[in-house]
Structure formats: structure tokens, C-alpha cells
Amino acid sequence: MANITIIDASMTYSKEDGYVGKVQFSVEGHDQEYEIALHSKRGSDWGYGLFFLNESGSEEQFLALDNELEEDDELFEVLIHAAQEKLVRQEEE
Image (cartoon, one colour):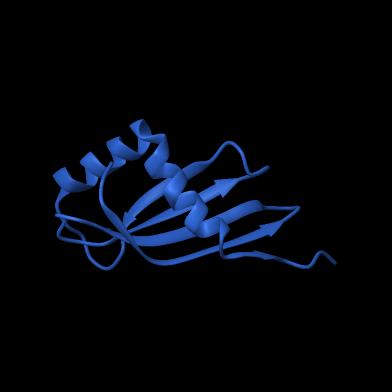
């Protein structure tokens, strides 16, 4: 598993949108920091988008990380849990 450091995380929940979160993090040995956007209607099957946080970096490092996120459930769960710890439930009107 990649050695990551969480920089910031957030998550919201509403009946309309489900769970929407993001985690900013760095990966040991990578030149740039990343942000992952997370979404799940029910909090179980998660979709994600991976982005460079501040500026573009090595495509090779980016693709290697994206592949690791696809293959390593433990790494993906670490990022999901970081966002879930910051969960803010939006008031329904």
C-alpha cells in the first residue's frame, strides 16, 4: 500500500445527493499532491474521481496511484474513512 498523508478531508450527506466527500492527500515519493472526490448514494458502493490538487504532475505517478486505488481496497478505505470522519449531515427542509 502507498504511504499516504491526509492533508484535509470533508464529507456531506443529504437524501438527495447521498454521500459526497473529498480528501486531499500526498503520496510518499510523488512530486504533487492529490485530491479524490467520493460519491455514494447509500454509503456502500463508492465512485471516485482522482485529481492533482494544486498543479499537474507526472502522468506516470498519477496512473500508478489510480491503478493502486482500483486494486487496493485497504488504501481506498483509508481515504473513505478520512472523509467519513468529517461527515456533516445537511438539514433536510
